[in-house]
Length: 252
Length: 351
Image 1 (cartoon, rainbow over the protein chains, first blue to last red):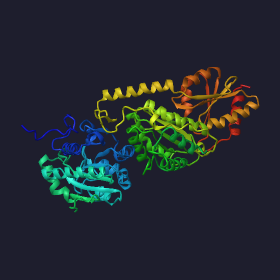
Image 2: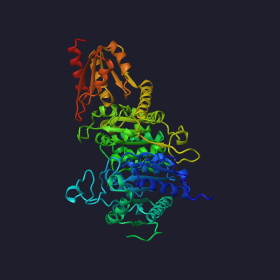
Image 3: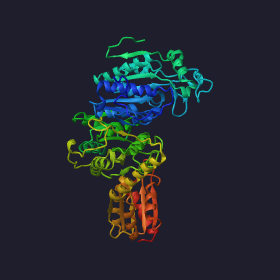
Image 4: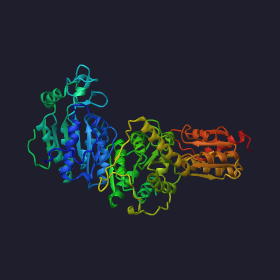
């Protein structure tokens, strides 16, 4: 019988520790599939974040070097500059990339550092227990924005991907989601394109992925996926934000 | 050559091809020199980062890849780098960090000071760790120690701090530079992350959630620190033989003290100098042995009294320890120090 579904070679045989309904497992798998399909497992180096995905080195079967909270873009810069012929990617959450690591990320993009960033946006600090994130949308309830985020008290959420698109050194930026089969397939294509952008040496590439966090959103996994469609995408519209390689033209 | 240029050139000759930094006075000649030198050197990479925090993490990335890498700063910038220095220690990554320290706390000023002794020798960042700390007192020594620090960093997989000050960085002296090491002749590293080609994948991490495993990691680091404490002690002594009193000073303060000692010796005072070169590991045993013969130690620092604590720990109450310090970026003259030394000398009825 033909095997139609199996574990990607670039994913280790360790069970994921993620909560039920969490998007990280899906995103890990997509990255693993892309690395396999591009045949770059032996030349890829990942930089995991501080946050829920900090243990990513237990899951990806590629070389990985841990970064402290927010510093993945700087660590990746050092790695890629030292090993320009390898494929370097960072895997970062919203707090990591859009709060504590904003400076590192904007400057890496501005310098046109030739690595890829996978930015997982679930609008909360997951690992620390659901505090307000820089991407928490107005009205969203978290443990540090009781009664919902209010602009006067808590400020506005940060559209980081749009900000990074302004940087001259960024080559490819797309926002996707992993809340439905079609969105998952689009996400995989975007990840592949981001890696290809790097392989062509075009500069900084980033895929922002809206990802469900049922645990901290206090929703069932199904509700969480619906909430992305009904609420989250209104604040973070899906689509290609910047496309220097120019192969895809569905920019919003 | 100027002290800052000497350090930069010695680093390149030691095989350093990666420099990440951020401007701060009084060390700007290091990034300036590196930007030019590395752009003309094969495989050389220089980045002026967006902050000291970013630059130390670029150091981490290049070090993970196996490169010889350096950053430099001064007091306030070194404070920002402490996050990365803690990570370098936990991840067991080699790197060289230069601190051309200045008057503090806060922004302080840009004059020479030794106020970062505690920060350098006590780890400086969070967690239970040590870094090798070397304190040159001349441009020649700055060249030699910088050169050596890359070997030490690689041998022990540890960050090494060169603790200088604004004066060392700015002063000009003739220097004999060490020979350039061909990168290919450097010993190979079997722990780097370079892509898992023909071998199982590796990861380098500092998060160890299991307290028993983390304890084991700490013990492992501790054993390394103990080895360094035995094998990498450096000090210099001067006019020790007949000394009744010993001045203990490091870095540029030792240079000033030497001038002062020469003066008081002309007046017949029997005073010697003990200069720790490795501040961590601190040459405590040697100092204790020396202090058995000399009953009076006079510690001189350009701060409010930091190394004096290590001196007191070393002699363990065995002898009297007197302290004189000038903080805030003041550079005392040998004349001033010679007066303080002789007044203490006579006060203790040593002559």
